[in-house]
Image (cartoon, rainbow, N blue to C red; front, top):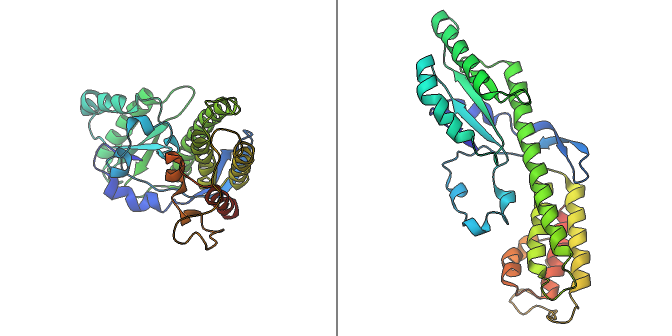
Length: 285
């Protein structure tokens, strides 16, 4: 996401989007081993985007995988007093949420021929670094509106990938712990396959969108195995075949044939629907 504090996004949008997909991103797989992803698909969306405001609070942890993986805070300022009294308190408020991975891009509007403006931009940026960088982590980089250099882009890409990797690690750990907790209940009366399915597929989806396909496939394989073990347990036997129009046609390579995620949430799916869906997801990955 882009937190556009100083109304700069339209000025930098094209430059930022040319960096996508992210080249050579180093991420951690499920075993916490580094994996080089050649082209990591990503998009920038503003924090005002309606897609970010459509969650119900009770759904947030289940659909955490859909939330942004990094926040780029865009700022500019041409006066030290303004920075201290207005911008700094506002930035502190924005970044105090430790759940989000963030970094700040200071945009310098100073023209190279204007010495005074260039010096002031350097002073404000130095203040920004002093206030928001820590010994453990650099959080700031400086973008020159009149011609950013290669050094900036290397820094920008590095900070963006760090944020994405840290967020992915946190979310994978969260979903794994939830799955482990549910797995322990597997042969008890309170076992709910549908909750397990949603969490397991969230994990598979995160690995898929970050191009960690082997890890994604493993999640679907484990989901299939778990389903095979639990489908014939006493309590809630599953009907096998389809009843809807079109169910007599194979859709083995089409995971979107039915909105199975919704069907699973409602706990009304039939065994053939599920098996067909899982196979289509495995084939796609």
